[in-house]
Amino acid sequence: MGKYLILSGFLLVVMGIIWIAAEQYGYKNPLDLRWEKGNTKVYFPLGTSILISLALSLIFYLFKRL
Image 1 (cartoon, rainbow, N blue to C red):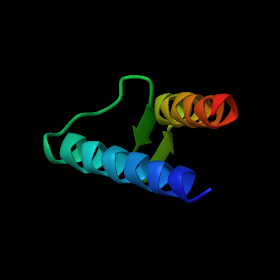
Image 2 (cartoon, rainbow, N blue to C red):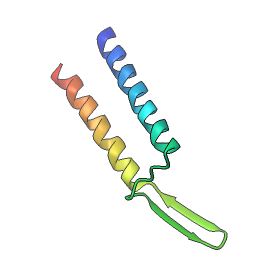
Image 3 (cartoon, one colour):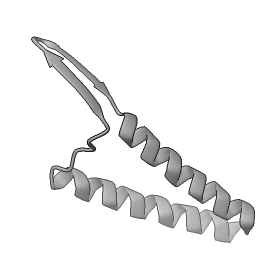
């Protein structure tokens, strides 16, 4: 169990570093929906949700196989 916790922690740290680096360089996911009109702003992170879902599915699949 300890190996799995270390592995999942390492993966979360790597994903966090990638996330921070992408934000610093101004990367915007093209599938994230934004709508602005006057003082109203609506943001729906569809693409980000899909990426997080794929990453978590891969992690859980790897845990199941080990």
